[in-house]
Image (cartoon, rainbow, N blue to C red; front, side, top):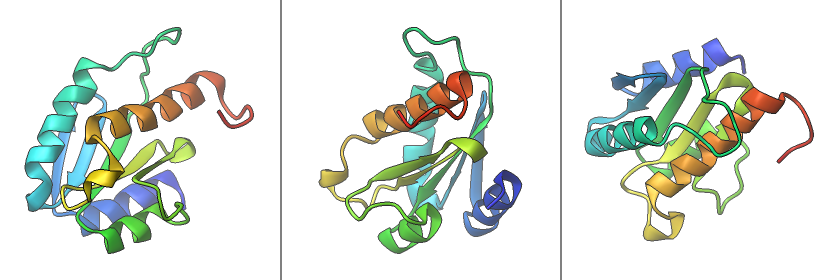
Length: 128
């Protein structure tokens, strides 16, 4: 799926959008607070040791439920709580309805953003 098509599908499916800096969050009203909190966190921690500051725009889709997460994430492992797609600069996260086993959403987002930052810097080298 191309980056533009992927963003369009999320934008059509998720009724709300929040743009902060280089980040675009797509979410449902029930995840408005989570999206706002994660946007602030992403802006405040938008660097990684040893890497230049990322400049590419990132779309972060917050899935309102397990079914939507699986549909948006494609072939994510069943235990996965988020997935990054470096080529299209997008991340899919589980929303507030996810169980505690998925972990702290800030830590999960930071992990996925690290994948994108490494890809931006290193390109298509072997997976990291």
